[in-house]
Image (cartoon, rainbow, N blue to C red; front, side, top):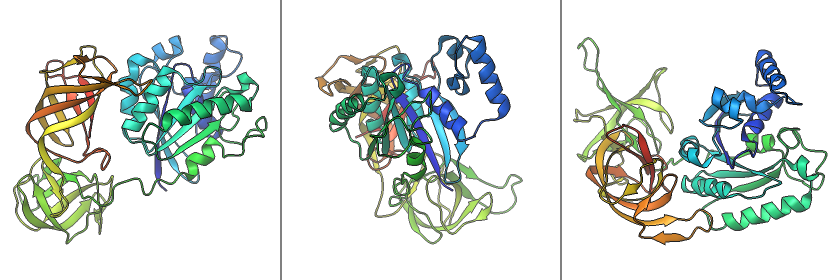
Length: 412
């Protein structure tokens, strides 16, 4: 049974937490005591209904304010598929949390309030989802019960989003009208919207095809750790890490980068024993036929299919810090298992998330800004374009004084 990783996105109070709560409730993925606690809290707050958003808004500050602050992960399954769902914040000051939740998603659900239509934050999140190359996108037009299940409202919002999305890099967009509060079109088809002939949200999530989304061509295996016998006895030497691309098999001819020394895969080990092949996102231990010096930050690839080793990085940046990004600033950079330092050489432009126009040569990038920058690193990084591999094509920037993550980058 495969796993679908989902991220929610959208503006404030569009009903993301309620939708996830409804999915958990209607798929019978919550315990009776959890439901009783939610019902009790809803009564204490004076709500006339059971607020299913409380199933994901776990922080006290979130419950008091009725907003989502941090990313909440929930796990559930149906007979067809397992799901990991990230409830991400809608507030603009928590855009960085949304980037975190969507960075590993296979599918993004972008919610809009049927009464309000597309908001600036909805467009911002759609732009980020496009930058993050999330393969599948669902526009969920929520709160249809508050607009009398109007087909005209649905069509107006659908048309506006499709026009906006045409300028982004989406490959698969599905639009579903629903009501998270009442459950219409969430798990079961709605009787109130007989004009809608598509699938419910759950049916779409269960059946969307994701097997071809991962890169199974380019072998990319960053070394995370070298495993040696703990007692010093024996000659076992394995390179542990997560396979980020390609299919690796014993007998494959490979190179260890950046040295470029050729060798061959002797065996692939897992906690369950040796395997005949490894594929993303498996974490394995690779044993090589030759005694080659390899350590954390090195990468295994095919001789005729290698990442680019470069110190000059051209990337889109989502800035996550209150202190702005400026030319000449220096940060620590972490890319796969390799760490270095980076200098900001140039800010090429800032992207306006509403119009998708470019503000050329800005002096800085502020909190939540998205822009294109040029970096110079202290040592070569083994990179691919983000379009080719989401994992070897991304990195984070870290403030060395506070150790805080201040930016997420996507290599052009």
